[in-house]
Length: 282
Image (cartoon, rainbow, N blue to C red):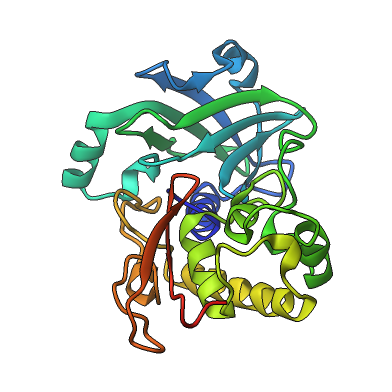
């Protein structure tokens, strides 16, 4: 499931491609939407209100990628297990033919530069498993049910949020209502780096350990973004390419600890697979 690095990678590629102008003679507007499967599209009645509005921002909030339009209209993308947001014209024909078997919705943008109409730009959203969501919404803050994104937190904020939580630290890290963006893979990798057992209660972790965990997560997420995220099963970026950071995982889906060479333990914490080294992580 895409987490902060994967969502950041895709959002950056889309932003570069759509290239939102910053002068009055240029704009990029949502010209048309083609719907192929309605089942995972929410608030479909807002589509007519969003059509022909200027696109103002493309980014991500934690794991969620979004298009923000004029007058507080948004389109939110939850990629879940198999979702992909693709720049159609930049992807190899064979790959596009494959992805189009799973197409859900297509966005056609009209670009005007200095008064001149340019070629339409098409973004395709696909999903195999249909656990994904595309949400149309009008709201001045569509992320209010989520905690602040990890990349906006200072260490002291990180500590203040987690240190009062009584559930296991791994579950606390993954709780999007506390902190947005960290999922299973990066919680596992961050806790291993910080030498903290995923089973310990968040409220029992020391301040020094929290500083170490914050530093580990920050570095791991930064390196993952440099490598366009981790592809474990279906994740691809906006160009249809796999991420590369899975080749640098220390403990996720591994059998032996890279530090002590002892066997890594694989358990479930509330139905989520967890890897950790009982000898190195206390």
